[in-house]
Image (tube, rainbow, N blue to C red; front, side, top):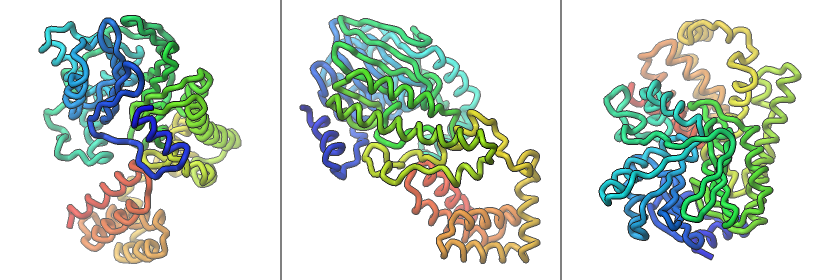
Length: 422
């Protein structure tokens, strides 16, 4: 068993406290003729008689390093690239693969994806500035990205797919057969692959060693119900090797079934409980503060809420099945946030009173309420120094109490905004 597979086995079976997602550009053999480069995202390479099949290409900043790692192992042509989905960290490095192929005199690799992926690329062109702003908040990529500047969100050298499919499609390259299957999940253009002769699954981001990214508050619609169904389908295949796009590969039929079923269980619990309350006519606010997963869910090393979290998934389920109206009639056609903030400040005795109460709440660990009040304070008086000082401190405290990258990033961004004002 490879070192990576031994490591993932220790984490799952023995509870070894090792973070399973690594970005080191290292190449490892995980099965005969199957290599994995640990990057952001991972790239899996499968050796065939006609060249290499590649699952994803990592991002623009790491694609070149991935190619270098692969070339230290093989000079075979890059025959086929599978885009598991159109997120930038999966397709952005493809230009490096195309450039390397040209430099070696090889044919350009064939690119395969689901049929919805080209529409995603088009949307990225329409919302390049917005997506850049999102990543600035979510990943703090201020140095690498320029909002509103000339840098593109989708690298210009990213090739469009040459071959697409709708539900399922089989492809064969150099004696290696892959069954490509579509499922909505993190995206509506997600592909996962089953290699029956090798009993191997390439799940893309449908399994990622974290609580599923099914609720990202800054991104387009996710599909938790369909995601769970895909995991159930994978679980029933009897796979002996699972090679995800983030995190370590996993070996062993029982172990793979366990992680897939546990992840499906978590999603299905949220879906069923949320839909039940929606069908009873409850407001979004009530559902958010009622539907919970058991604490032991997050004790599993592959379900820790370090990236996304259940509360955000509930928001996405509401958006998917119920639209944007949250059940509070004052939110249907609301006043401007700043107008409401000024009214609240006047009723409470001024901005200083809001700031003081926000600090009291924060000291009592009532951080949700404290954030509401301090945000209203700066909206009521945007140049109020004491309000911004308190906002920077309260949102920094909120950031430090959160586990998921999504929440930490947004709260940290708010804190830095007020620090900039100071």
